[in-house]
Amino acid sequence: MNFAADPEFCSMIDRLREEVENTADDVPAAMAAFEELAGPAGTEELHRVLTAPGQPLWAREIAAFRLGLERDPRAFEALVLLLNHRDPERCVAAAHALTRLGDPRTARAAATLATNELRVAYALLPVRLLAALRAPESVPALVTVLGRRLDPADPHWRVGLACVEGLAALGGPEARTALTAALPHPRLGDAARAALAGL
Image (cartoon, one colour):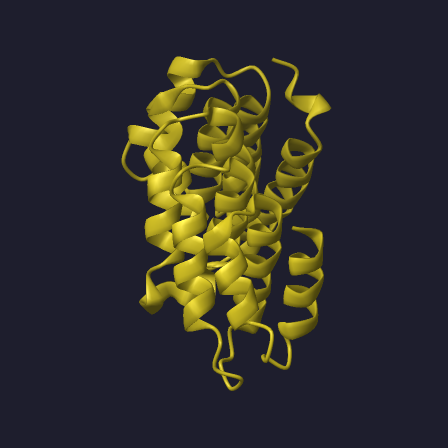
């Protein structure tokens, strides 16, 4: 596969190259390993990086991303962990790879992450992934998350907005009901109104 043609791969590589240069103890050795993982490494070597102890996070991220784009199911667990990472850029890359992976477990995992109220601060990318997957789990999970974001004082309104956008794309009676409930919200109301108009 020509990974260089994937803009998200290029973005990830640029980000992680800077990370390696700024954080590695032995920069020349780390950069040699980085270039191998970003280029010629085969699927078995990538899988070894995922399972070997002591591998830096950047190495695991490259390995998981590349295996995801190769539709190798061994990437699934690592990508789900990255989808729930505190660093939004890692979440974006993981969501992209999970979409390409096509693993049937992805929607259930994304729904679990999105509806975990203890991790709501990191729910934005799982919510967007659910909308993109258009899986049976998508609408129920987005309805649940949006329902929890309807307090005008809720600080995670951007997660609620992503739910509104996802439900607008997915449609259906449940989506319409949830969007109607969001109409009075000061930050979500306009988006909910536009979504209902488009359904």
